[in-house]
Length: 241
Image (cartoon, rainbow, N blue to C red):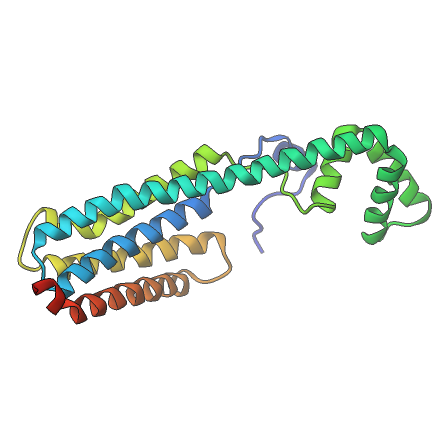
C-alpha cells in the first residue's frame, strides 16, 4: 500500500520542520458554492418571472458585488473574532502560569493523565512540558480550550471567499452578457458543471468519492435554483402588474 508520505527519520524531520500554513479550503468552497447558487437563483427567479435579460445582468452583477462583499466581510469578522479569542486565551494562560504555576501544573497533570500517562512517566512529562512556557501554553490552548494552533488570517479568509464568490458567481451570468436566445439553458448547464466541479474538487480533502461529492453539491445547487425559479414563476403576475 502506498501511503501519503514517508516515515524515515529524515522525512519526518523535514516534514515537521517545514512551515505550516493555514488552510483556506473552507473559505474557497463556501464562497464558490454560495456565489454560484445565489447568482443563478437570482437569474432563475428573474427568468421565471418573465422579466427582460438586462434585468438578469443588473441584478446578477449587483449580487456579485454586494452579496460577495457582504459574505467576505462576515467571514473576515468571524475569523477575526476567532483570532482575537485565541490571543485572549493565550494571554490568560501565560498570566496563570506566571501567577499560579502550581494550579496550572495540576491542570496539565490531569490533561496528561486523561491521555493515559501515569506514575513516573506522567510526572516526567509534566516536568518537561512545564519547563518550556511556550510549549506549556500551547498544550493548554489545545487540550483545555480546544483551540487550533494554526490560526487563519482574517484578511486571507475574507479575500478567499470574495474571490471564489466572484469567479463561480460570474459563470451563470456569462451567457446573458454575450446574449443568445438560449442564455438561460446555457447558464443552467454551466452552473451545473460548476456545482459538480466544486463538489468533485472538494473530494480531494474528504473520504467521499469524487462523483458522490460532485452529485451532492449539484443536488444542493439545483434545489436552490429550482426553488427560486418556482417563486419567480408564481410571482410573475405581480411583476407584470
